[in-house]
Amino acid sequence: MDGKSFEIELTMGVLRVYFPSLTKWTETAPDWAKNQWERVRNDLNEWCRKTKIPLEIEDHAWVEFD
Image (cartoon, rainbow, N blue to C red):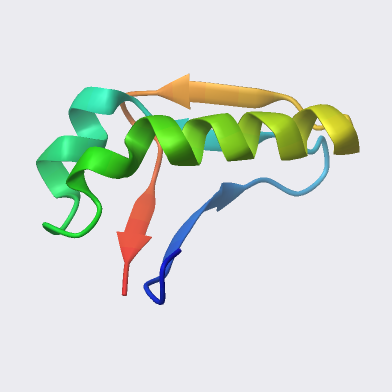
């Protein structure tokens, strides 16, 4: 994203994408990503819809910023 990157959780077996809640995102995100939650969620939601993989937004979802 704009030259930066991050990783989120995609489970194996029954495919499902886990994305952190806005609260969790802003608590762990570096400055460059703090205000990008909605943008990323919208893009990810569209990708999940196209690939027919459910998207779960949860407080305990894992995210790692590079």
